Amino acid sequence: SITGIIPVTGIVPLLEAGADAQFEAQLVQAGAKQNSHGALTVFSGGSFAGGSFAGGPLAGETVPGSAAVQWSAVRLDGHWVLHLEFAAETGTPSLDWLRSVIAAGQGEAYGGSERARPILSRVASAAPMFWGSADSVLRSLKDNPWVDWVGCSSVLSPVQAVLFHGNADAKGVDLEVEFQLSPAGSMTLATLLQASPSDGMRALSDNAGVAVSVSVDLAGAEQLLRAQGCDLVAEPIATLLRSIPWSPPPTSIHLVGSHFEPSSLSGDIALEVSMSDSGFLRSMLDKIPGRSWLESTKTIGGEKVKKLSIPTFSALYYQLQDTSFRFSNQKSAMELLVTAAPGPRDEIVSLTLRPGRIPDLKTILETALPPGFAELAAAELAKIAQVSFLVTLRSNVLRLRISVVGK
Image 1: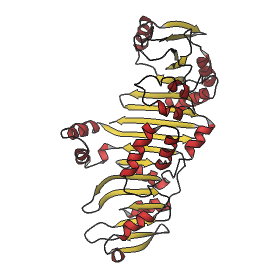
Image 2: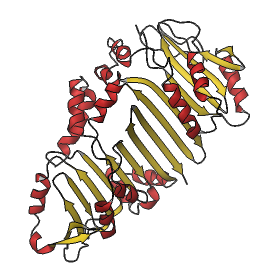
Image 3: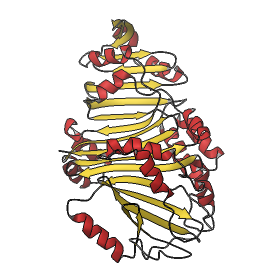
Image 4: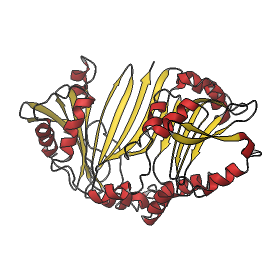
């Protein structure tokens, strides 16, 4: 049986004006209970034991095992505050989580997601936010054949609380999920972090059509996952590493740009790579015909860089050191890369896409999507100003942020 799971507490904006009363009525109609906590009305339900949810919005849903799944919700300072927890037995949900939220709020109004974040952070450190381990929960499901990811349950054991908040309106969606990690868990993850994008790369990404960064040692991550029995995630990473024609593979890679034309080497593209050995890149450079005649050393921003001038093509700039490689086909971008300070060592992976700044987006999509889908995808992306995905590790907080900004 399930004996405990990470509880989830979230703060989300209220529904549109006039919709709250209707929403509350629907909760009661679906079987939710109403209780008082001071001047607040708390809605709760969703109790489940050995088969299906008995009441609330999840009535009729089934989950294998034997446990009680309880949810609670309260309207507080312009937001709905939601809580979900698994318990060993059914009964009236504990409101310790709500007392923690109120105490952490310290009388502040939630207002928006930026104001909710520090309140949630304080909630994460307030007891009791942790009733059991995700490891024990997932392993209790091992007899269910549909759970083929149970071997990865130990990866979640360092997670002590999950918090989320977000905003959604006509302009877009902004969602953040925070995983509060144990000290040992955050230290283990920190050992995989490599060089984050430099300040120069971040500056270039501010206006680029595409910016992608992977700042984690994928080979090390694969080994760690296999050691913990999580082959389900480790194998796709291994497949990716085998597909990269780079040995040993880079430990971090950051790429920005909006357009690149291989036939003339024109466009705007910049690359920043960290690696354990530069031998592979040096061997590739040695294979360029007539390189000694085409290449010269230049000083840019006080740094020595190489300029590769190919007749009828745009010039290329690069700087190759023992453990780093910087490249661009624009001199101004190269100067930013070689003179900027290192970025904070907290980013794991990020992706930013600005469709309107990619002139050949449809052509790119046609090479990646089945026939007929590229035009549809391009039309949908044309409605979006920016999509971004970011995962960071700061102290013991693993944060995932997804943002979509419409035009």
